[in-house]
Amino acid sequence: MEPGASAGRRYLLKTFGCQMNEHDSERIAGLLEADGMEPATDLDDADVVVLNTCCIRENADNRLYGTLGHLKSAKDARPGLEIVVGGCLAQKDRDLIRRRAPHVDVVLGTHNVHRAADLLAEARATGPITEILEASAIEDHEAFPSALPVRREQGHSAWVTIQIGCDNACAFCIVPTVRGPEMSRPFEHLVDEVARLAANGVVEVTLLGQNVNSYGRDLALARRRAGDGRIRVRPMFAELLRAVAAVEGIRRVRYTSPHPKDLSAEVVDAMATTPAVCEHLHLPLQSGSDRVLAAMHRGYTAARYLDRLATARSAIADLAVTTDIIVGFPGETDDDFERTLEVAAEAGYDSAYTFVYSPRAGTEVAERTDRFVAAEVVAERFERLRTVVERSALTRHRGRIGGVEEVVVEGPSRRDPLVTTGRTRQNKLVHFAPPAPLRPGTFAEVEVTGAGAHHLRGELVTVTATPLRRARIPVTAG
Ligand code: SAH
Ligand code: SF4
Ligand code: F3S
Image 1: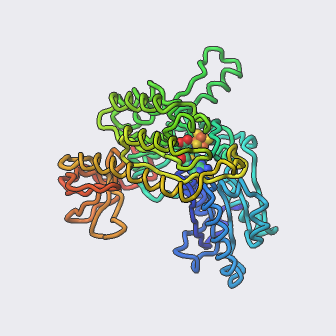
Image 2 (image 1 turned 90 degrees about the vertical axis):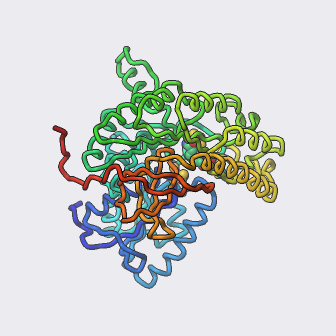
Image 3 (image 1 turned 60 degrees about the vertical axis):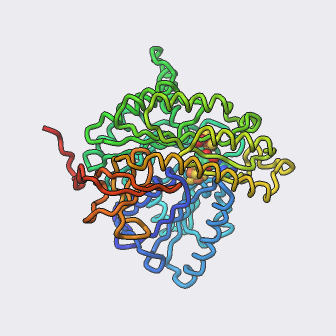
């Protein structure tokens, strides 16, 4: 395809899923812009609408088909409007999307994000296309989302996908089906990418993967199979954290998500001894009941989870801990749920994503309707868990009042443009009102003066660094 084949056309991109999905969206936007397109402000202004979908829970499906229904009327009124559906739900539903919504022009999956602009051009020339690849079709590391052009929302902060897919088989989860087996991106490519980002003004990177602790195991295995007998087959995530943090200009390194069963002493040590790695651990618990954890195939018990958390807390000063918990897993009893409340209270989370179990066709427990927990029981448990989590969040946040924290500015607060929102190293949002606007990416010291369950309030003490303008040519030191 000739570059610029879509020159002047405008695209509207909607993201439904997790950070990995958002990162794919950045790449799709980057590819469309490389092809000459510009972002649209709203639907009326758009020539192309791209929906990047998620299927982790059922309401994600409903939202997509609702949006497609709405777009049908827009397309009836303006037949030139093109509709692209990508992401995890597209990977899962494939032809079903066009059967339910024949007005869709392109359906693409999670393994061919790099084809977004090409497929759009092909559809324009020859008619609607569905292209879903199996994971095994990826032979080329260029297919990693981080290896494609990008349009980032924040200049100072970037996501870097270090691994795609997941080799675990949690009984509730659709991700392995739609994202395929684990594949790590080569170590040197990642370090080079972070160096390039830093040269363009990025100071903070978030490494993304479904189970980042196992990063690199597949690469070592491949080298061993190719005849390099000296290679030990083991994860390289700790080394990666250190290498990325050592890149000139990188001041903050985050990552998500580690799996509790694989949280190694090496990773905890790398966090503890590498100053750029932020003091934040997102450690998904899912349930506090050993019986439920076993049925989920999580590979740890509650005691083991708490033990690993205690080790991490004693090694890393002022560590913030967040988690994911599912309420109402099939067969969850009152007693199982009490264990979850106990473990959540003992863990003392800074925040938690709590989810109502949602059956996903094709996963192990989705057909066990006989074991489903009644909706009103789940709703009551959900509220009780929320109360426990909010209590610990508030306690931990109040404990920060009076301290001075390093904050990176994200921009004006959504509610009040005179208030600035920034993020602390512990990944907390802080709202404060500087005397003059501060650009995103500014480093400041902020005294914490107030706390809620989901944010902190503060007062500016001093600005410590202003953001680099984004340079196209890397600036070398000295
Ligand atoms: N790989 C990550 C999780 C990715 S999915 C990990 O293992 O930590 C993000 C979260 O969605 C999961 O941690 C889980 O809490 C939730 N989730 C996944 N499948 C779900 C389902 N069927 N119903 C409800 N919540 C689910
Ligand atoms: Fe899903 Fe489990 Fe893999 Fe996480 S580790 S993506 S919850 S299967
Ligand atoms: Fe993410 Fe949803 Fe896919 S959570 S990996 S976008 S199913």
